Length: 196
Image 1: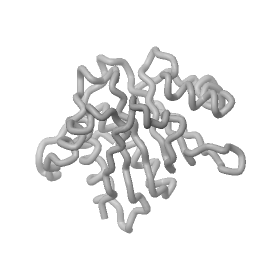
Image 2: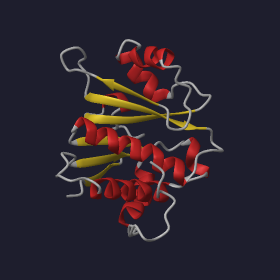
Image 3: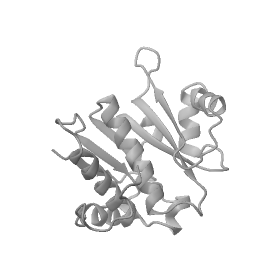
Image 4: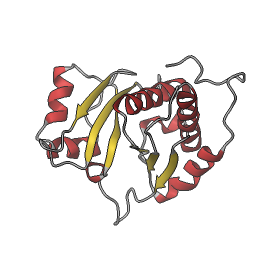
């Protein structure tokens, strides 16, 4: 069974939670190469007493494409709305294309399946560094394609029930179009094939 895709279009509105306040089992955060933590990850890091920045330093995390850090935020240690955080490197803006997006999404879904979580949240910020190389519709479509391909490879039923895309109200219609676009069959050419 494919998980439900939900769009939370409150980003940037007065009703918006900050990324640090999103209640989810697994939150995806990204970091382009050569940049500092963005505003959302920085606020989350402050809430966690610098845990994220310590892990970034400890693992020499520079944001290379595919580089990742997983934080297991045990409820008894951290009073945090997320159970897990996955920070994934996007590489440079020149490197980021549909294959790179597929790699990031594949890592996220693999981690969600490994952890056995039910809910995953992915912020699609308005000021994305990757906006010039991959639009919101294309990004949402690639996400759905990766999810369906990964779940088709499983033997049993996944625990993953819902994938929430957190975006601005203006982005919602583009994300919806991408999620509704037909998914290619394995025999058709797709930039995601063989990019895990």
